[in-house]
Length: 250
Image 1 (cartoon, rainbow, N blue to C red):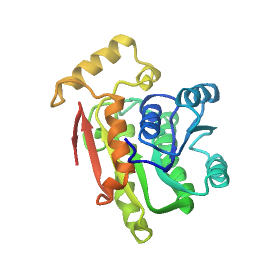
Image 2: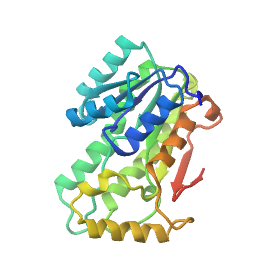
Image 3: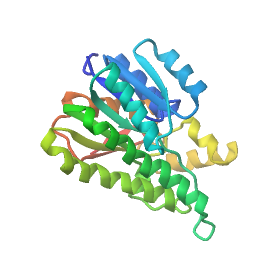
Image 4: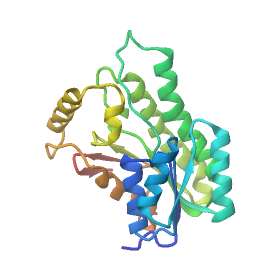
């Protein structure tokens, strides 16, 4: 397929998981160049190497506006514009009310909310007419699961950004949409301190809530993001696409 032919894309949080698979999907669908970012330089460079010559690795932390300036200065120098931004960087961590800490709250809001703000705000001057901004939200932004209040609130903020920024940018013909996956099996689940047994149990529980009685796959999310990045989605703006167990719903 070539529905992204000639597109210049930036994907944050692309060391692994959804971000990396989406970068591969973009390249497979004809993107001219895909800039991928992440904090872990070695892992990021390995990811770029696996993607081939059309991928460019730029190590950086989305919570630092100066590092996002550096990213987009490089994009401007090399490509001159941006057609697609997928603000994907983020992480999940549970904590029950009563045990919330400043570190927990600041960590989740800095990456999942402020990181999205700095990514998009720094990208906007380079985005061409007809460009697409895609934000990574989650079904937890509209559902209430115990112990996930801060992460859920962060993703609810991202949902709001899609609607408000779509209004902010409509005069420039730049559309903003959000994808809200259900539970997706990615390396990120191993990083919040749960045991393999706990993660497996969580996946099993999540599968019972899905229409297809299974959890989602990263490639399913990537295909939806690629559609939103393409000109085929020019009729969509300020929308949220839910992806739960292989079922997509707008």
